[in-house]
Amino acid sequence: SRVIKLAVIPGDGIGPEVVGEAEKVLDAVTAASDVTFDKARFSLGAARYLETGDTLTDDDLAAIATQDAILLGAVGGVPGDPRLKDANIERGLLLKLRFSLDHYVNLRPSKLYPGAPGPLAEPGEIDFVVVREGTEGPYVGNGGSIRTGTAHEVANETSVNTAFGIERVVRYAFEVAQKRRKKVTLVHKTNVLVHAGGMWKRIVDAVASEHPDVTVDYVHIDAATIYLVTNPGRFDVIVTDNLFGDILTDLAGAVTGGIGLAASGNINPDGAFPSMFEPVHGSAPDIAGQQKADPTAAILSVALMLDHLGLSGEAARVTRAVEEDIAHRGSTPRTTAQVGDAIAAAVQA
Ligand code: NAD
Ligand code: IPM
Ligand code: MN
Image (cartoon, rainbow, N blue to C red; front, side, top):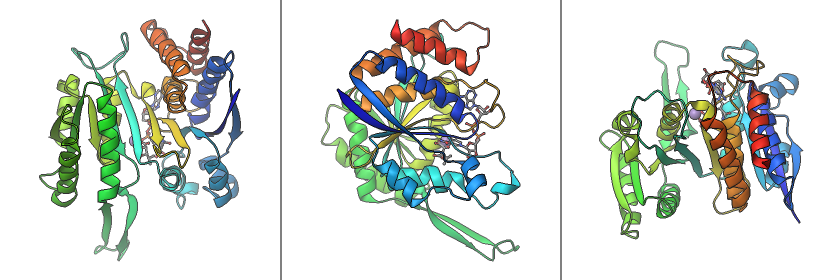
């Protein structure tokens, strides 16, 4: 039998609530199989910082790096909490994990499941995948400010884009497209960000020439937000930079039934480091501790994890159970645990 070492990072706010349900479903889907998940829990996030002053120590990182995969809820304290003024949990924990573990593919599928509530009157079929670059762009922390706090302050936040970094994520996007409807859309802002955008465009065109059966198009980020609402069916695989991908995938979550359904994987395709699976949403301090959070995004992130680990049968069972649950959701609100229980029961049925 196969033993998979799993780091579990529940995190802050609704993180522990949704991860609890995701674990329930993981336990249910592996109950009768010959795979065992050997879980190591890591207490990380705002709560840990407030207790110890640590965000992510070298020891934490080293221990996490030896696992086979990571399941994360969400991190981030209550915005405006004065005790977190000097902490940057998002950079010091989440981005540190993504960068250190070379999660250069941030995979964010968007699918409108039958019965899912959506804001669009006539959504048509929505089924696309955003391949968001995960280790570069404006996220690298290459910036600083001078004359800070004065009327003459200057603040820079430089977007870092490397040919190596773009090519590897673009290649991944084409591989994903080959297994889908064979269409890749580059989303950027080449009309203004001519240097970075120009390089993205050139690399996409070069990789495209190796994939003559894949249709390639280009859409500016601002227009992409229009099409995501007016004609989401035009997208199959979107490849884009770290920041554009962040923004676009919250919108994608909203048009496919809500952010509570949006799953993601931070993938290191080379397998040199464990990949990390987490809902797209954050710690939602506004609803934390109230059993109001939808755990479906965390549960679908488990499905992405199972797929990544080669357990496609188990992954399909989770996805099918979620699909059934969504199809039968009535208008009566359920608690976080009730949704998890229903999906866990359905994977075993
Ligand atoms: P958020 O995603 O936490 O919340 C945005 C809105 O969506 C809120 O109204 C919230 O109630 C709702 N929502 C989120 N998840 C939901 C769920 N599962 N079910 C139902 N409703 C849900 O974004 P935010 O408010 O901008 O950020 C809150 C904190 O989370 C910040 O500290 C932010 O930095 C952090 N954050 C962390 C991650 C992460 O850990 N991956 C991602 C995004 C934001
Ligand atoms: C996400 C989040 C993170 C991001 C933040 C919390 C660093 O918004 O996972 O989408 O911007 O990538
Ligand atoms: Mn985001």
